[in-house]
Amino acid sequence: MQSEGTLLLRRSDVEQLLSLRDCIDAVEEIFRLQGHGKVPGAAILGVKAPGGGLHVKAGLLPGQKDYIVAKLNTNFPNNRARSGLPTIQGVIVIYNAQNGCPLAILDSIDITIKRTAAASAVAAKHLARENSSVATICGCGQQGRAQLRAMQTILPLKRIYAFDLNPRSVKKLAAEFGNELEIEPVHDLPRAIQKSDVCITCTPANDFFVHRKDVSLGTFIAAVGADDAHKQEIDPALMASAKVVADSLEQCCAIGDTNHAIAQGFMRKEDVYAALAEIVAGEKPGRTNDDEIIVFDSTGVAIEDAVAAAAVYEKACASNIGTHFNFAA
Image (cartoon, rainbow, N blue to C red; front, side, top):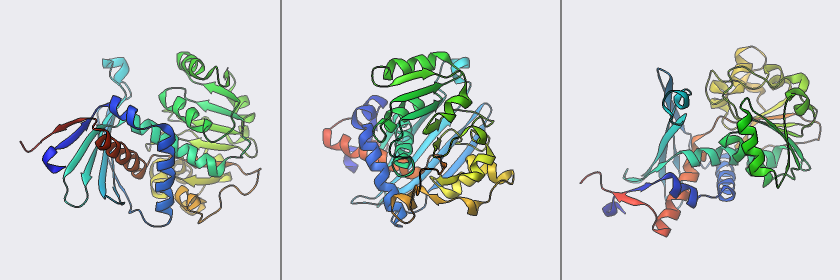
């Protein structure tokens, strides 16, 4: 493999090689391994720039072959308006953990979208009511549509309340899912949330918009958008009164909706019920009754990127997909 150089994979290659179902299975398995103490801790780094910044998430992925995987994503919210570029751009680098050889560089966007949706689906499997049929989606862009697609694999969804500040995003979601589900555009968000079994938030909001008073007993909330310290979607009072499950306890206390609830004195780190890995591994029970309000605080963790990227890399090698490049030449 070293003699062939580093494998380069385009976004189209990644999309072809990684199905959402495979990603869900891989993410659930890596959380199970983490819950059993078989996955080392990961590291994150943030660098701010005028108008945006760079986020780095890296971790060691043990297995039959050990990999070090690092994702480097930039986030520039005004890119579309200013230059027509995507808000998020990035790459994932996979190294041989035995000798440090760079094995692959691949586009990160499809993996980021699918692994985030996969984590919500895994959480819903363990934390949502099994008969959940009504969901509210807040944020109907690429991530919102992926979240809905992933939830469909886990829950018997029938009716979807679609909320987005951009009506075109709602129309696009309706066009994709209209033949499968009953899609209703939302004009009254509190009412939609009150009628939902599941609420998924995947927006760039800086101020919370899901209020405690609007959430019915038994609701499962996947809080996905607050992946930076300034972002917030969930009422701190709701966080304090709900059963909170984190994708990463330390990370959620630093940048997630849990962070805001702690900073404003509504809860403590010790009040977080569990990490998702503990529940998937069976170390703690998930939902224990139909009245529990459960919030999955999803900030996005390195092991999700790592396991998805490794799966893509190994499939690419087996299928002879991609281009090799020798950096040492």
